[in-house]
Length: 112
Image (cartoon, rainbow, N blue to C red):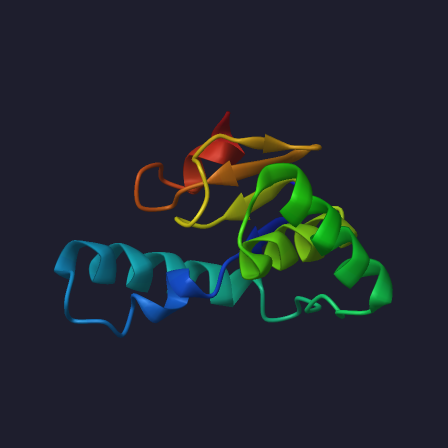
């Protein structure tokens, strides 16, 4: 599997949050596996191109600014998947597929 995956950092925050034990356990397992694989990941640089694209996405989909910025950053890196719980699961955003890692095991995207 060579497709790039963009992970919303909220997924990692749940690993530290005791309020929802189910999400905490899933996030810890996901965070450990992803961090091992992504030690060499290159974070998206937010430049004027990404910022302008995020405003277009915000206007088109009526997303919050931060959600639009995450989508624009993922698209700028040519990611195929975006792991987040903040957007509609399985939504297609111009080639970017939203995966909610608390509803669908992200490993399933690699085996399908």
